[in-house]
Length: 467
Picture 1 (cartoon, helix red, strand yellow):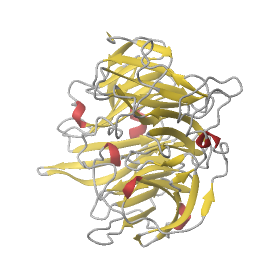
Picture 2 (picture 1 turned 120 degrees about the vertical axis):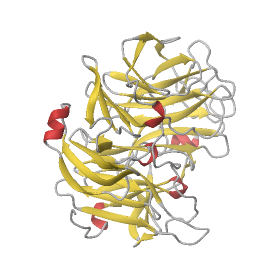
Picture 3 (picture 1 turned 90 degrees about the vertical axis):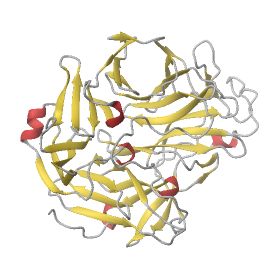
Picture 4 (picture 1 turned 90 degrees about the horizontal axis):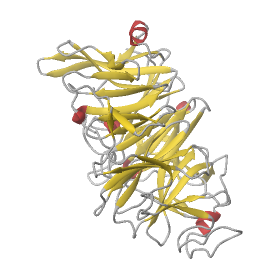
C-alpha cells in the first residue's frame, strides 16, 4: 500500500464552482459520446403539476436565498445568497478557500421535487412525469450529468441533481427521494471559487459524495462525504495535486478512480492500487463498491469485470480471459441480481451481443454456474454514460442507435419493452439518453437537454418475449 501525499480525513468541508461540472472520469468505453446524447430542443408536452408525496420542507431555504441573514434563532450570520441557519464548511481544512454551505439542524431544506404530467415525443409517444424545472429556490440546472440509484433496502429511487439559485451565481447540489423528500443538500458559492469545483458523483444507500475538483487556480482535489439524510457536518477528504478523480464509497471503503483505481478503508490514511497492470485506465467503464468488495469493469480486447477484496486482491469475476472468443462487460447489480452483456470476438471486432443474469453472489464460480441468457442486444459494450442500471427484477439500458432506444428487460423471463426516441426534424431531436434507475413500477431516464423523466412500466405497452 502506498501513502497518500497529504492524507487528511477530517470533519470539515467542501466546495466550489467555477464553471460547468466536469464529466465523470474513466469514460473510455467504445460507445463514446456525451451524457446529453444528441442536441435538441424538443420539450415534452404536458400540463399540470404532480407533486411528490413526501415534501421535504416548505421551500423557506429558497426564500432566504437572496439577501442573506444576520443570524436566526442562534444560527450564525450568513452571506447574501445563503439561506438562514446554513453552515459553512472549511475546505481545505485550515485554508477554507473553497466555500460551501450545508443545512444545519435548524435550516430549511431546499423545496421538494415537483413532477409534471407529460407526453414524451417518443415513437410511439408515451405518458410520463417530468421534473418541474422551476422551484421557489431556483431552477433545475441543465447541462450536468444526473445520477440515479434504486435503493433495494428501502424500496425507493434516489436522484442526484443540481439546482441554480435565482438571480445569483450559486448552485445547490441535491440528493432526493424521487417522491419528493430532499435528503441531502449543499450550496456552492460560484463567483468566489477559483480554486475548486464541486460535482455530484455516485451515491449508495447510505452515503452521498461530492467530488472536489481543481479549478483554474486549484492545486488539490478530494471529496465531501455525508451520511444519507444526515444534517451532521460532512467528512472532508483532501489530497494535494490536481488529477482529477472521481470518488465512490461503500460501508467499508473509499474508492478513487483517476489514472487507475485506488482503495482505502475509512480508518486508514493509505490507499492501494487495485487495477490489474494489464488493464488500461482508459478502458474503464464502471467502478463500484459494495459488501466489502470493489468491482472494476473494462472494455478493449479483454473485456470483463474484476473483483477486489482485501484478503484476495484483484481477481477475475466475470471475465473469459485474453484471446478467448467470448467477452463480457456492462456488469451491474442492485444486490439481488447480477446483469451483464456477453459478446463474441471476430476478426473485425465484437458481435452477437447477448444479455445474461444471475442471482447476486460474490463467488464468481457461483455466478457463472447460475447464469441465464435473456435475449440478444443491439449494441455491445457501454461507455460510462450509457451504462445500464438494475432494480427490482428489471434491467434498463439505452442503446445509442440512430434513434436512441430505451430497453427495459424483466429478468425473470427476458421479456422486454423498447422505447424509440423520435427524430422530429433536422433542428429538433428528442432523445432518451441515459438510464438512471428502475424500480418495481417505473424507469427513470435522462433525456436531451438533460431533463429527468419517470415512465411507468405499465405505460410501456405489451413488449416482446425473449428471443
